Length: 282
Image (cartoon, rainbow, N blue to C red; front, side):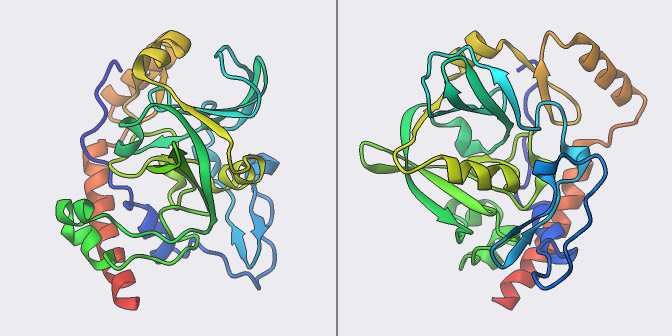
């Protein structure tokens, strides 16, 4: 990366705030939400059992975040999921040379694993519990949630989760949804690989148990994607996108981009309060 990722991006910042304070989970008995202008059909609100998955805000549907068919230059074969945590994309290879590309958010755990695995377990609206290390690192945020959260749209794992195994053993590497769609395309402080809920729902249906998964190393990412540049907005783009990079630098210099450190501090404070309320309700 040309710029180092920000040191702290609270995974619940914004996600708990949005879900618990603004009502992320829609009332299943309510009338269907009208289609949002500027949102592709695949990212509109959709019924999902007794829940309704909210539409994705079009602000978050950047060119690299939206799913799209692309030519695929990697060596992996049909029905393989390929994760590039450095370029922050996931490919579902459907045939040699062709794949569906998805934008992803990458947590710290998502940068500590590479190589081959398989989908060994799948869960719909999985429950979530912070690790002991997370509670020690940020007791104000994770302490109230130490007992865990039931599955739902206000859960950090989102609508679905694919659990990756190697040699029959859980790698603790997951591909999952999110309660914070604003995080897609960015780095986060915890978790593994997250997608928009609409994307993980479809991926879940298209990836049976035993699906092969390849997680690229940094060397493989550089070879196949080229060097990436992290913008002041937190997104990454290829270093060849000089106009985008220049526009980002100009917007930053003009004060048009909120300082991420300030924004994250505000989101963290709001998330701590939301976590306190969620813990008290459990």
